[in-house]
Image 1 (cartoon, rainbow, N blue to C red):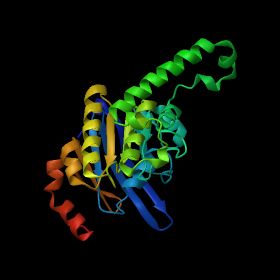
Image 2: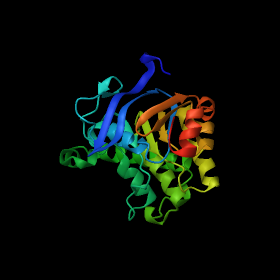
Image 3: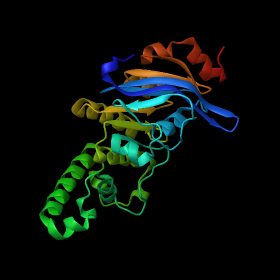
Image 4: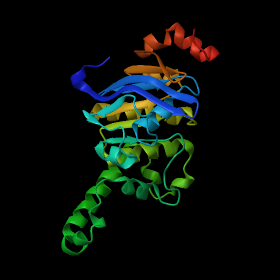
Length: 262
């Protein structure tokens, strides 16, 4: 799929077991810089497990494979270190702080927090003021982009499921990562908000050149959004290709219809 020189994320021969259950069995894939790459497969095929391994929430099985991000090996790092390297991810269930407002959730996600330093608080107050103003300006721009500006003072816990998905995307944008990993971004979202979310992701990719790697069940979403798609089944690579190629692959159709491959 990718030109090696343009590969942002490389996953090679990754295995993950839970007791006797083999959740991932030699998975390989690459995500090209600036792309929107999809990951699909039947329930239980290992998609979220792979996301959890890439982002450090699960450790891969010892003695197998490696994960490279921008040429740096990140398997073995903890989630905060991987986030610092430039990878952010969402979860199937919103991780927003429910009793904080939409705006507060965005500001909390910012990487620039000089106010946490006692030295800065006493000796560099102008830095704190300027940084706060910059963060507020950026947060307002993001709220406008994700269409939540009218809800900036609403508690995150009061948002609808679709609005929480948009807020999760906004939190990632506030952290400004190189790779955004979205776990089922349209699940439980009504059709109108789904269309809004897809348009926002497409526009962000076009405007910023950021890279997206997403898990999806909706082939409509995959077709309209992704440049390239990987398919997992029973923890193994089944096939990969453009959305059109994947949708016409008999192995994919069989996996989805019967839950097994020949």
